[in-house]
Length: 450
Ligand SMILES: [Zn+2]
Image 1 (cartoon, protein in one colour):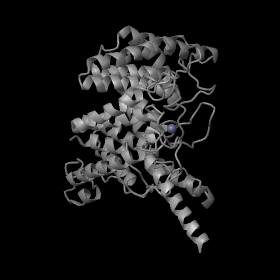
Image 2 (cartoon, helix red, strand yellow):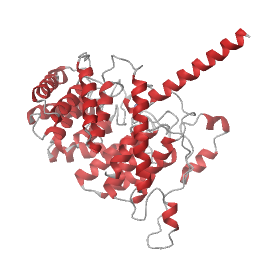
Image 3 (cartoon, protein in one colour):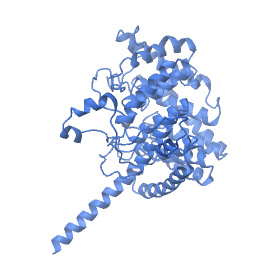
Image 4 (cartoon, protein in one colour):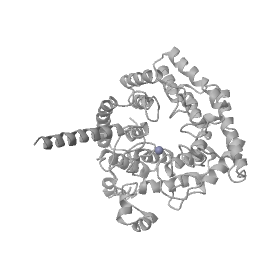
């Protein structure tokens, strides 16, 4: 099994108590914080040794230092075994936790479609039919409770319909798959006509575009007609041009977007999440539009970078606080990597790599282990960088994040939302808290009895 897939699966599931080693210029900044400030820190100190690059030294010491990588620079067999066994264990715990989860939450972000997607991903890696069957169970459940309120992949009906189409397609249930597709494409009219709809990834048009491209990637390039995709892309571009004009930013940032009247930069609500979607080859944005509108807008965001390598959450926010997929460098890096792929310019890759340092320093979050605003989402960056660069350092760091995720989570804060897919294993934490509460109550009752 491909090692990155093994880790990817686990970053979806694991929990952590990780210490972060502070390096570089962050050390001096953080030394200035007093102890109460440190209590308020959003992340754990990373005490991991970093990857030791001693190519050709032949001493053998680097191999030990770089565990869990073997001498070939691959994830060692024993580590992979550990990962496999943890997956089994956590799936059991997750299923147990799901017994008390919100029965009405069908979304990918916080609900049952997220669980279906997890099983679909497990099936992709393991080829086990039981995983696909489990995905189908959850898909059936979600399709009964859609509410027509939102249109995005993560939070709206588009997610369950897209995942449903894919799961049925893999099981050769042609009619059911087609039904999901038809219902998905029908959402397009409200995506195009609703002038109040945002453009961002979590709730808006880019989130709907994600669902269309996901279906095409999984079921074949022309499953969703090109004209459908083009119309959604045009709506996103028009909206960005229009706000840029209103704000007199056409020279600096020809595509500008806002959500709740704030110009966010991060992946969930902001510019970089939308640019990431426009850069997808499947979005078929013409080359001249990419270079005239998308590239200068990405470059505009690049120049908002803090010295630490992190990014502000919005254009009006100067504080270097959040290091997570939804706000901060982790989300921006995915867009930089896409920009490197599309524009073939080294500066995007270099910047993605430089920015990832802030994640190694401040990315082990106290909020939890989720993908949106948790440690797993940040660890994902190292897998993406490894896939692009093949540098062992990134695979090593991803392994270290995973190891951290496997240790205790008792110092975590309650993540928001508490049971989201991007933090779906938070269910486990919820259960533990419930058990602790019951234990305390029993103890109290006993002492009252005495
Ligand atoms: Zn988040």
